[in-house]
Length: 196
Image 1 (cartoon, rainbow, N blue to C red):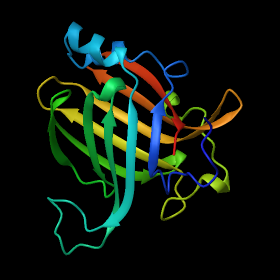
Image 2 (image 1 turned 180 degrees about the vertical axis):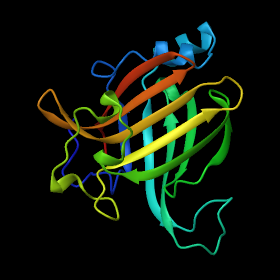
Image 3 (image 1 turned 45 degrees about the vertical axis):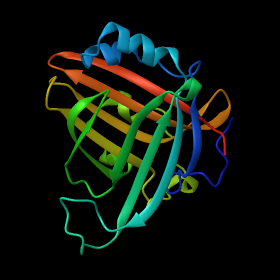
Image 4 (image 1 turned 135 degrees about the vertical axis):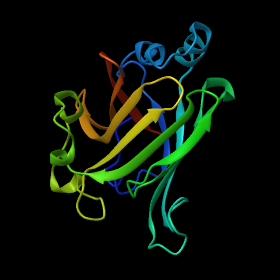
């Protein structure tokens, strides 16, 4: 289902479901992240629903609690049949924070607002985005969220750009993801349909 016009990078709150037929096969990316065959098969066999809450609050540690409020994006992932996915707690202030979960292990990541020109010179990450005024809903007119994660244990990095694209004639929430490890690289486009 297409994203309604009021759903922008400035308000992703709601339920979104991954459209597996429009998204890339994630197995090569999971393999590069050193996940076992059985874990990869489990993850690729389910359809993920994201329950997103986007709100303003003081930044998470290690930032000072007295620092000015920033936007947080918290995501609870649930797989088909109620399978527990991972939790994402993103604070859009570009500060590195540690995180551990059952799927990705021990990582550090940072997240921030971005415009197309802020994205590194990577043709895939920059490709296909809607950039009209109606998409520029970040606090300073940004149209994207930019996330970077490094694995402490397995040596991979993941860079994501979030925004909106027109796919099959409909405006949809999309994440372009590049997973890299040494000289290896996997490009993924993850497409989400809006539920409510």
